[in-house]
Amino acid sequence: MKQVLESLLQSTFSSLIEQGIVPEGTTPRIQIERTRDKSHGDFASNLAMMLAKPAKKNPRELAQLIVDNLPANTDIEKVEIAGPGFINFYMNAASQHAVINQIIEKKQAFGLSHVGEGKKVQVEFVSANPTGPLHVGHGRGAAYGATVSNLLAAVGYDVHREYYVNDAGRQMNILATSVWLRYLEALGEPITFPSNGYKGGYIKDIASTVQSSCGDQYRFDAATIFDGIPDDEPAGGDKEAHIDGLIDKAHELMPEGYDIFFNAALDSILADIKEDLEAFGVSYQEWFSERSLTSNGHIDKAVAMLKEKGKLYEKDGALWFKSTEYGDDKDRVVIRDNGQSTYFASDIAYHLNKFERGFDQVINIWGADHHGYIARVMASLNALGLDETKLDVLLVQFANLYRGTEKLQMSTRSGSFVTLRELREEVGADAARFFYVTRKSEQHMDFDLELAKSESKDNPVYYIQYAHARSCSVKKKLADKGWAHDLDLGQNQLELLDTEHELSLTAKLGAYPDVLLRAATHHEPHQLATYLRELAQEFHTWYNAHKMIIDDKNLRNARLTLNEAVQQVIQNGLLLLGVSAPESM
Image: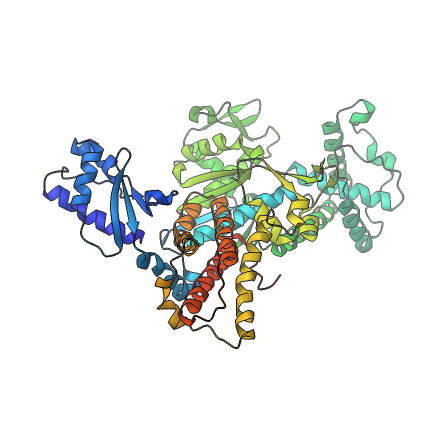
């Protein structure tokens, strides 16, 4: 219906230009929105207010001229002018019912559009360091990123989902060294485990695997290992210097064996992450290795480009990027004084690589703790002569998980955290996926385990899935009576759906394409989650107030057709959120 009204207003706009009411060359974007309050009609437009300044007229006076010049259309019952110049359209019942037939005909394609057709967009999300299992904080980024990707694909974009594997750098060295020390413990060495090492039980499991394949080949006595190593924090030392010393010692003692521990840890944890995400309904087209930026020369290329453009300088033996020239709070090191590239250098090279792959839009979904990285990355794009407007950085707050009144811990390093797998096993993937996207990504959220497991209307995912299952149950009840749904008859008797509940439910169905488009283009899955809950509420209210299995054949089949349309839209919406639509509960 929006397209019909937009076409009518475009025709009216052309007429106003021909009459000299609106100056030639005026090009407003015609906006049609569904009204929230039905007393204001079904749709509203602010066109008069947008044209008031170029037309040099009072908005209400101009609104009246627009209404007077509207072409006749049988779908419109009446048009009113409200407030400062809004034009409200009241549609007749037949035009509103048309959406039911559209849903029946288009099925899963209902609501889809081609807004992004021909445009390639890359969405990079989760990208957690492969230093331990995914925890519930990562789960929110996974659910959000996967759903944003689904929504963009639904409105026509060619979406490339990517995970950036941070398989280089200090954290991976801490991980590999932690595995080596646990390996030595398993062999009976009296190791005092570093306070800054990774302590999760999974470290011992990986160490055991290495022991099974390598025996005691990489065993060294504790005295040799800790000789010359700075004291740890509990002994009054520096925990960072202590773990760095152990990393250096591991390389020194095992020049060829170090990679065995490094790769065992990386392969095991990355396989676990992939398995976890797949079970969570999250898949990727590419797992991009940070180490490949070095081996394939991407970092060298990026640094050379910045040098050529005069954006680097040497200081204290290191190579610095002039990020303050682009609004960053300080310049950033790209090559350390020991010749090693920094994590930031990898970031620069990775983003250069993204742009070189020809994406029309690049979306980074980062944890909110990465907020400080945005300015420096944007600065590097500017310095490289790339279009920074093609990059969107969407921040996701980690979720706070509660079991009753107890807030659960999220520390990967300490080993005391709730994994995404544990969350799935407790509340199910459906509840987890849905709960994660019920709020804006940048807002803090408290994940209530008890609510997520409850079978009540207060649990939104249960409430919506129950609406779908309830809709499906009608078929069995119909079969018990020996009847079948005559779809053709139902589609031709939709004018009988004239109760307040039926008109309201039909209007809610008609809003789905607009909600889907807004949720996609604004990267806000919570809009779709909220819509589905509202649709479920409208359906339950109608279902409780009006019987479908009645003797009146025409009305029965009309209501069954409306029921099928509701079922289809709920299914479509849940699919985009990565949530199942059960036929029975």
